[in-house]
Length: 520
Ligand code: NG6
Ligand code: CA
Image 1 (cartoon, rainbow, N blue to C red):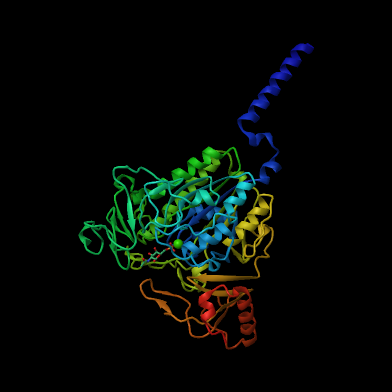
Image 2: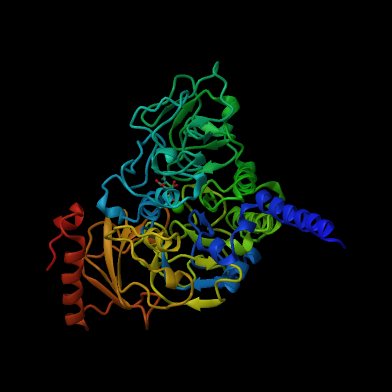
């Protein structure tokens, strides 16, 4: 080959290489550089219990896809939501702030204003500042607008104003109106000639309700949930109009999955963050017909299998797009499990041998362990070594930890930087954590859990869950007694005193209900 020809060949080869790089910017950077800013996906389920996943011990429900994350990643056995209900946990996850610092961070109606301050640093905002494209798909439940939302116009502020470049959401919960999806603040499929009206105080004239028209319902309400009827399901709150925009409950999982997949495909060439907030197994449990009967537990079990399938399909997309190795997946749940949460759906009757709590006491709404200790998994193919971790960690810690991963630092009081723990490189988790249930709080320190005295029922009657209320101080040693069967406050007065002191320091004057308690 003469010099001229070989020069041409070299030029052609170089051109091919460069063209390849231009097509996929990731190829242009070294592997280490690319991994500096991996994609980050938070898969967040709604009311999934510690014992609802087969990797965590479930035998009556098979969750092979979530199990894959758990067995090939870090499976945390002491990972916590910040609260035992939805809104406060999501608030803490996205802001890195304890929910009890914000009096509005409680279960919200579908008409509530946004409770995140738009000036506040958030997980998506921080990642956006680091060059990430940020998106939310699924359940929001953090409020929208500033009050008196007009659902027929652009609804704002919302996810887009707190750091999400893209948002495809349901406003509140599957059991609350409005039963429509919003994409970047706009109700999808809305016919302007059929405007939506929403109220949480009174019904619209002539509209049927679950209370007055049980004959129109296909799912029966047990407590609450007797206002407007949509798709045969009576909901919380009243809604009129927007017929064409109303979601299909049985297609919701597929719908969110499709949006999450599209999002990945559209942003695979840049670092992206996705908050994929599934609606299962919150009520109303409406498995797609493909999943009906996939467990013997009725709809609650079936929607968990459906959610697991979604996880599998989602991972498949990352694989097909060639970005699984460059994506950190964090899987968790917003709070612990509940069986009857207001509808008759056989969750209680068909529970059989399944233990949604995985041996823990309490459940959703509770200060006992099952309220906040949830499946918590980190997975990053080729980067995270498979292991179990008993480190104490909380979803609130994602802000500071993922900031480190993204190459920055955030000033936070509550969120702790535990990136090495998330990555399975360290088992030194938190030393302490304040846990919340409604506005009640408890202190975890090492293996000790201290619950101050609270008025109120020991058991929430309808949901049949022990709330953790007692006229006495409670102290549990979780090392020997994970099931919290024995209050050892009396036997450990010094430990109790110490924890009361630390509790007061941690809570300060910020929790009004706790202030009213007479701490001995
Ligand atoms: C409760 C609802 C419950 C559920 C919960 C919120 C009644 C009687 N109960 O008020 O069904 O919607 O709020 O759940 O209405 S969470 O997971 O979003 O916190
Ligand atoms: Ca929830």
